Image (cartoon, rainbow, N blue to C red; front, side, top):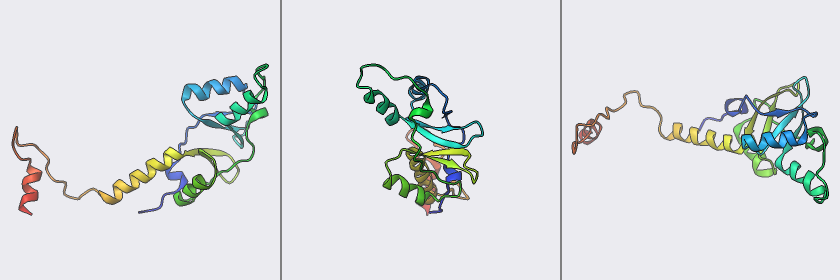
Length: 163
């Protein structure tokens, strides 16, 4: 199977927050978009953190439900970042997902600017695509699959019998 790179499978248009985004606004976006987290970037597009559902849960549980905390994304985001470059191989990406408790990998360029994101599901899609392409490559001469009518044998079946 040919190896793919991060740039081949990453999502380029990702949901992002700034450190100044209101925490509850960010939580609302995560819920409405049905995503488990998003990258946090500064005004230059530089990745500075990630806000996950887990970060949001920590906020709520930390207050012991006595009062709901106020704050901004920058107050609660994770700063210990695991990132990949656009040239990172699919095999290295899989290894990161297997060895780290993460659900998404921000893809950053050499200046630490966010250029995309890869989720576990994106990797599964890439593997499935590679598998289908490898196992079932397009034939130069596709068989005619036109049906010969009810109860009839398709042209493809007839050609297969002749082989």
